[in-house]
Image 1 (cartoon, each protein chain N blue to C red):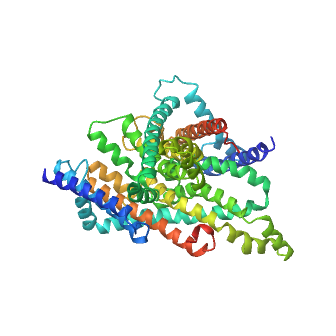
Image 2 (image 1 turned 60 degrees about the horizontal axis):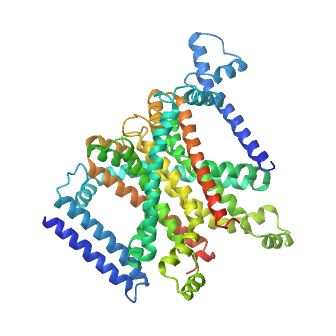
Image 3 (image 1 turned 135 degrees about the horizontal axis):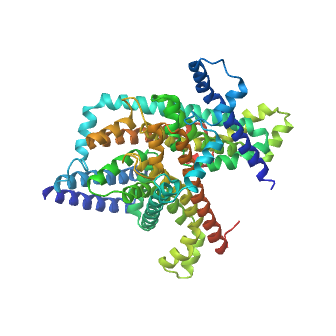
Length: 288
Length: 281
């Protein structure tokens, strides 16, 4: 409980600041309407109340966003094209598929790298350098190229997600699989353990904390990849499409709701990975 | 067919050369560590060129590297203008503002453990969110030009930077702080003479993470609306024309800019935190 109080205070402060900013940003429109109608300059209390529930505010108030989220998740059939659950699921499925592919390939490459010196020296510098490159920029190209090859929908987005989660996992896993120190490796050698046994009994267990750390980075990157991957296809479906169509039609409330839905999905996935991490490390006796 | 054979031969030759080099006696020298990845990169380029030409892949799907290089050479002014608009005006402005604001905020909340306890989990949480999604809102608020891109970058880099700086300000250990106290150093003196220098490795870690984020933010924000110049705009517009060589040229520029930016930060880090164990060789 002692840890929650500061967090709640900060969140409350953010909400208050948000309301303040909403009043300030939206009041211009209210004054504008008043001058156009030829009315007197409205009183401040009236301005405040009118900034709270505009249709297309510059900055929607928190309760508007929450209401929109509620309306488009619970208050609507899941199959509806306006339901955020529907769009969220489309984004989430691409993210998860891509994340699974990217993580699998990343772990395989990491295993190859620690067992093959030539591969280590050729690939590793590129894997590290690739983290400094804005890879996301090629997302639209992948979508369009795969589209012209006849691939549509889930797979192109999943490929972008896979690509984005691939490199963090490779770098993290290589670090993790190398984390056992020489003494431990020597001990296994005195037991006459094969290199496969050393791999499964020593390297894999000691790489787990590193794996989970990079999984958390990877899943966040995957989600961003899936969202950006939805932009160039012209806003068909998915959270990215909601963002884009909202920005085309000036539906600010819709943008914010989609943004919060994406935030909730991201937070949910990170929390799930955190729970798996805690469970796994506990069963392996590695909880500090 | 000749192209495919040449490509495969180059691939096998390059790989064989790398195996030999990495097991040679001087593989751990600087030259060896540089040569192997370069050979690997060059073989990939040859393989790409050979396969695209040999198999007759349409340039609409994958242009060969030679076409991309020709495009870079022929449209240098365009690429330069795009680079200036996106990387310097958008990303760099936002990077400086965002990182500066984050460091100042970290110093401001440094004296209040209550605020730290509240802000850090929130900051960690926000750092994991898909903040690029804020781009359409910023484009609406600040217009199509570089200001909106800088705003997206500010928000993207703020939280990773804040979390790192706060962690860094805790890096000076109790013994060192006690020493400053016995010198009767004021809060400001302790901050500038001990704690900020001790925080430098963490701050630079944040700066390095942010340098990548900044370029991504600026490019993606341009997908939501931009003037007719900029890397994100060019990528988006070239997709419509199926001018894939132009896209690859922009990606090459982006990769170069990203690596150079990161390298610059790493170089400054090496100069400023020469005392840290990770910088000693």
